[in-house]
Length: 139
Length: 95
Image 1 (spheres, rainbow over the protein chains, first blue to last red):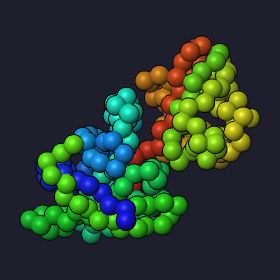
Image 2 (image 1 turned 60 degrees about the vertical axis):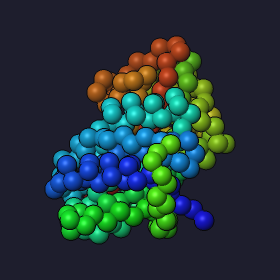
Image 3 (image 1 turned 90 degrees about the vertical axis):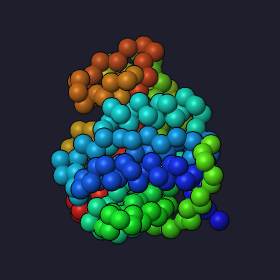
């Protein structure tokens, strides 16, 4: 079964990023050897309405994906936060899911004391939830 | 001008799975025209109906986002690398 192996320290980094950007949506990538999370890359959300949408800075996106491909890694996951809605892909998330090779990780901060982290595949408009496995302390 | 074009996973169905393909042309527009001649369907995936670069596609000439230089009219040199990267975008709101 399709799972996302995410070390606990990386899940913590991801939630810290989401909290730091609140109430704006945070976004970033996780790169790694196929199927495993090697490094978390924060990206700057440059959408004009960053509380309700995200669009990663294209210049940073190029730099980060170059780093991932130079290491012979994959884009393992794309993450973002929802600050006022559940950790489930919105219609906009589905329309703009242009990386079928990646897992989509969502963090909801509807309850800031209890962030909810879930992961999905979004392929050709179809959403499938996948398990997030706490996989030790990093690749 | 002969260039290498890097293709994102979502568009590799047009290139038989290839991650990078060759193209040629003196501008980004000409490179895309040649790309579409060799791999039909790529232009429609990269450009919007009005002919400009699709809102959620980024095209880079080497490290430069072409939107900030000459967009489709950006001149291309022999040996340049053109990268196509879809936006990392979405969000809670519609539209």
